[in-house]
Image (cartoon, rainbow, N blue to C red):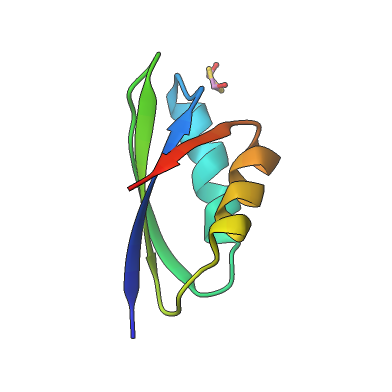
Length: 74
Ligand code: 9UX
């Protein structure tokens, strides 16, 4: 079954930040769609739609690989 997960990512300030994070998370197995609500200077909400459940550690690793920090999950 498809799942949706929201995470909060700190440190993103421009559209290129959004592209980097989107690309990394899209590389996770099963991920079908990623949308980012950018809040420069704050925590940006990243919504992940996936065909299969994804591990929080995979999301954390992808965010860090892109150069940002996972602030929280919700
Ligand atoms: Mo834009 Mo994001 O110049 O770290 S890529 S600020």
